[in-house]
Length: 80
Image (cartoon, rainbow, N blue to C red; front, side, top):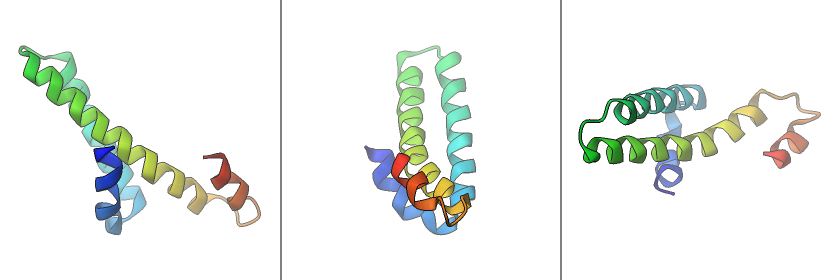
């Protein structure tokens, strides 16, 4: 929920850039979760992963609608 709330405030940099930023956050959170030595690192990795998933939820739907042809952009958006 926190990731979706924060996603609207950074969308001015562009959807593609936001998707790339969430990819980087996902990679960092995966590394933290994989190589944790303390439980706090695991929790931080899971928290960052949740933020990234919230960002994906917002940005991917709008990006697919933006890239689809005008004839099918409405139904495509309804499916997401």
